[in-house]
Length: 67
Image (cartoon, rainbow, N blue to C red; front, top):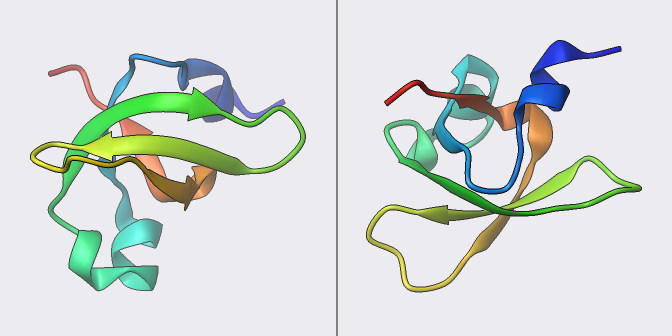
């Protein structure tokens, strides 16, 4: 079982991790909040700070933050 997947829940603050920064360089410095989870896929819906609309990302591209 993947512990990182278990710690990501709606309302969790996150940042783009190293894998996400390599795959999506424009998102490398962004942070935000998780607004939706998918049960059957690896997708996750997030709202980046300053954005008006949510985005969908691969769950493996984000890490939770303590801030």
